Image 1 (spheres, each protein chain N blue to C red):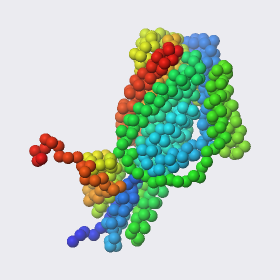
Image 2 (cartoon, chains in turn brown, yellow):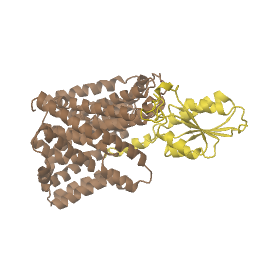
Image 3 (cartoon, rainbow over the protein chains, first blue to last red):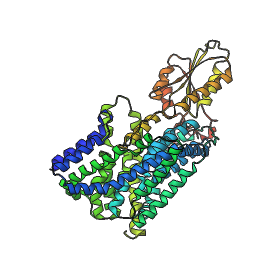
Image 4 (cartoon, chains in turn purple, blue):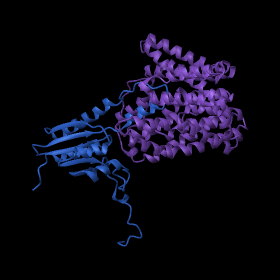
Length: 414
Length: 169
């Protein structure tokens, strides 16, 4: 049975990497999820339990993505781009610092998707407008989308999955992760400043335009949403309700102001992605219960000492780099959750920071692109990989060390 | 007698373009047949943007070029500056595509001059002030190359001294 569900998992992952005819990943994942239940690799009862476990998490993500898109439609990112452009005064070094601040905040609050899809294009346009080399700032934004997604449960889909598995509160998650988050961002900043020292000395022009003002309502709604997460977590309400309420308020306002259409809201909501995560979750569960779980259990460390935490992070980072961080976290989470919250958080450092090693998030995608793509990306891949090698191992070790210090020394074992 | 200048290629880049255009303006006065090509090859940041989205499973959306307007504006400003400095000269602008150092080298084939800016470490007169793409272009160009400091050159004191074990000391 393990062989059959393993084969289905490989098919689902291969489909997601290759995406024949640009079809959504759910096209393979949903039927595969149904088949593993029909053939009895996972009981219907267990499959339903897995769906019940994953559904609030993916609905949360769907709502956060809608909030991000509506912030964009309201001009929040345009405002941020102008603010950092003006603040830089045409200096590449100042711009890099401001991009770090913006990307760290956007990733932490609105998730890494918002940084990749909404902030990074604004960073590129800003660098070009200022007429400074765009590369350092692009790499900063791309790296921070991963490595700055440690702070809050909402910063990354992997965190949302882990929060439920670890059983800790929203606030406790943030307390344990704030120091690792800052340490990792600090390392990224140091390495990028050093690596791009030359490019950053070139001066651009000053931009003084102040045409865009901070859209107040979206800013207030997002602020209220953050407070809502903390409150909801303490009284046991699903955070998805809070994110959903924020998305609803912004959606109604944007529809009334004709900033978005119902159709584009539907695209933002991204139901195929929700279906994909559920299908993938069921197939992974079948594989884990079929025997892979006990196999990985032999590899996985048992304690929560410094070395064990480091091994958890390494195992997670390796898996995330092989295929993608989503299946990696689904595979490792049940094992880490059995050990304790610190092991879960170490796994998160691995799956969140780890993907910066490879240019497009995983070796599988990279290999497929080399087979399928006809353009020459050698330069970018080489440059990105060197940067990944310079930052990722250091970020993993320092991030885990910070987590260990905060978790065992300061907060006394959690 | 100086050879007449017919074709000048200016490598336009963010950060160095004003100095390069100004240097080109010094080459062409009194040359009735002179033609200046302003060439800008944007880096592959747009590719990076697209590839970063590929890493997000299930969440890709159509990416459109985000900096196309800014790229054309840079060329237009370079043209306007050259026009202001030399008046009537034949100017063409080109937005290149591909590995920047090779596109620039190819475009300068059979030119009289290629004007390039230093894109490296500009804080000292060091071995790395050129930047790797500029170094490639200078190494491989077939025509005369004019190398420009984009901002005032640092003092000669920033040149490293002769090593202590150098026999010529």
